Length: 275
Ligand SMILES: Nc1ncnc2c1ncn2[C@@H]1O[C@H](COP(=O)(O)OP(=O)(O)OP(=O)(O)O)[C@@H](O)[C@H]1O
Ligand SMILES: [Mg+2]
Image (cartoon, rainbow, N blue to C red; front, side, top):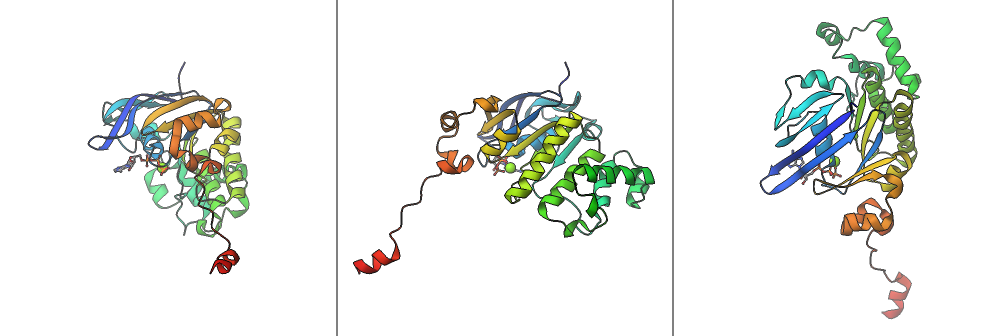
């Protein structure tokens, strides 16, 4: 069986003595949708950046779509080629605001389009059609010829997802794609990711702060704490008491109802009485 993602013993320290990733093992099959959970600083972004080959770890190996990304602290010679099959979705969308949405989406073709054409932003009619189809799939084709900066955050994030469709990515890595969005836009972006995961059998790994969103959209959860995988299994099995065990004092960040209560403040009227 080939896996969409294979990680073995991946470790990374940015500072001596502090491990950002600590012996991470992870297998993700084609077509899975996995939530990466963890409190701030637990290593979610670091893991995703290692999967995409933006950074080399200190030890361990990563392969995506059967192609080596890195091994024993070195990026693979073919990392650029391997990256062509990976769509990365960033919290801050990473679109060029002054360019039309369609042009941003068509940059997903770049690994396959000759450099001179991409520099001239000269795309074939069939390629533009492909971009429009991708925008229609994520529900924003009406905005194709507007500047990206004129779209709402949620629409921009869906354009970023359309770019991974044009790229024909087999794996989508999304690093907190809804962290800067309102609840309605968040729902649309998560629906879009789930729909692509189901219809195209694309493997999706999405880091999230919110346990409730992870449980709603992702059948499997991988939870990190201090760079270690502390849970990897069905999201249905993650109970609040298990989460409390995994996260202790950090749980309030993941489940707001478990946040420490602020001390009650006496109403002003009562203070006035007391004076
Ligand atoms: N480029 C870097 N240089 C130094 N330290 C880093 C770097 N990137 C990450 N770290 C450290 O690695 C640890 C994990 O950080 P990471 O950004 O992966 O956490 P995270 O789970 O994504 O957190 P958040 O939820 O806040 O985004 C942290 O201690 C962080 O300070
Ligand atoms: Mg992060």
